[in-house]
Every structure is written in structure tokens, then in C-alpha cells.
Amino acid sequence: MEWNDWILDHELAVRLGFFFGIFAIMALWEVLAPCRPLSVSKAGRWASNLGLVVLNSVVLRLLFPAAAVGVAAVAQQQGWGLFNYYGVPFTVSVVASVILMDLVIYLQHVMVHAIPVLWRLHRVHHADLDYDVTTGARFHTLEIILSMLIKFATVVLLGAPVVAVVIFEVMLNATAMFNHGNVQLPRAFDRRLRWLLVTPDMHRVHHSVEDDETNSNFGFSLTWWDRLFGTYRDQPRAGHQGMTIGIHKYRDPKKVDRLPGMLALPFTGPVSGYVINRRQWSNSDEE
Image (cartoon, rainbow, N blue to C red; front, side, top):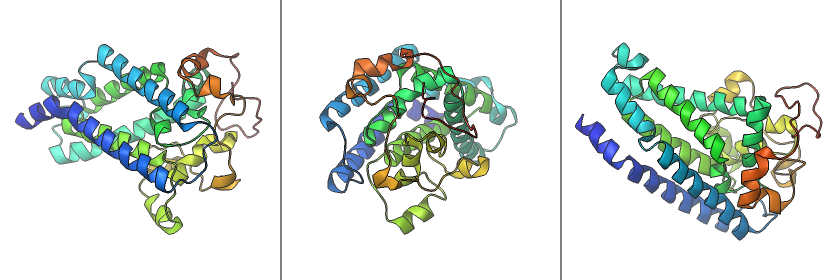
């Protein structure tokens, strides 16, 4: 109980410490050894992307002051969830919770690509004209709220321990910044690492303007799910230097890389028949 109390008292400081530490490392790495040249002003993009991060953080704190760790603490006190109900050993429940929560994130990611109204929210993330560490935290506020509600439901259903939730949050934030980095690992090391963790080259494919490439490599942390469910793609057809980042129809920096345009993007344009895993794709279906 004392360990849980310490985590509840310090979870925000722990998560912020890891966030700023990993962010600084990735930002410096991008300056020293960028993988791709940027196509638009970095200063403008960063101001908007990080401005959206600040806005989302404020909204989440106002709506959900206890956050996911608070939900986990209540679930433990009330005996809610599979692991609490069946008295699963602590270590097993922590490891299983982290893995299963990562699976839920994968399934959620597939869902926001597969359902047109959710894709309208998620395309804010994909409309970024460049790909760097700030892209990893660029999500529309409504999608962030939806993601938090799904996380709450998962924590309650599993009865995930408080420490597992903190580990998962730190891991998700760290790997999101890492695999969205404008960096490139040595090919041999990348090939080995991506059997476990999503690498920048692996996830960059997911941000291609080509529909079939966008609908691949959905994992954020663990790569197992893409391999297991058949959504893994090794490399983009045009190569990492030749591929185009973003969405075909949304190429105006004022609309996709400025905060007002990013917030308005889900409400722009008609609803289309966008669905995942079609056999025939056309570039007219990005709406």
C-alpha cells in the first residue's frame, strides 16, 4: 500500500521526467543526425504541435484529475477487474497488464483508421507534413479524450496494478517519441530491435501518403501485434528518403501545421467511405 501511495503521489513527476528526458534526447539526435530533410518550418510546426500537447494536457487534467493511475487505485481497493478478482500474483499481473494494454492500444489504433468518423479525428496526427519527435504527441483533443476513456475501461476490466499503469504510460510516451523520431538506426540493429520494439523506420511507413502503407504498422511500442495480425510492412515502396509524409489532400501548412487548422481538421470536408484493408485503393478516399 505504501508503494501505491508513493506512486500516486509522484506519478506525474515520474511521467514528466521521462517525457522531457526522452524528448530532449530525441530532439538532439534529430539535430545531429536527421534521417530526412524537413519540408516546412520547424519552428512553426513545433509551436503548433507542442501547443496542442499543452492544450490536451490541460483538458485531461480538468476532465480526469485522477488519471489512469487513480482509476487503477480505485479498482484495486474495490477488487474490480480480472487480476484482482482471481488474486493473480503481483508480478504476473504487472507484466500481463502492460502487454495487454499495449494490445488494446494497437486495436484502438486500427479502429481509428477503420471507422470514418474516428479517422477524421486521427487524421490530425497523420496530416503532419513532416515526421519528427513532436509528431508522436500530435493528436486531436477529442481523440485524446476517447483514448483516455478506453484506457480507463481497460484498467478496470483487467484490474491492472497501479505500478503497471505507470510503467505502461512511461513506455508508451517514450516509444511514441522514439519511433516518431526523424532518425535512423543502423539497418542491422533496426532489423533486430523491431522484433520487439517499434523503430523509427518501421513506424515511418505508417505515415506515408500511400493508403496501403498508412494502413500498416499500427503498433506504438511492441511489434508483435502487427506481425500476429498481418499488418506488418517492412519498408515503404519509395524508400525512406523518397516517401511522402502526410495525407494526399491535406498539403497546406496553414491548415495542417497551425493549431487552429489542426483543431478544425476533423470537421473539414465531407464524410467519405473510408475503410481499412480494401483490395483497391485510390488517393481520393482520404476524407
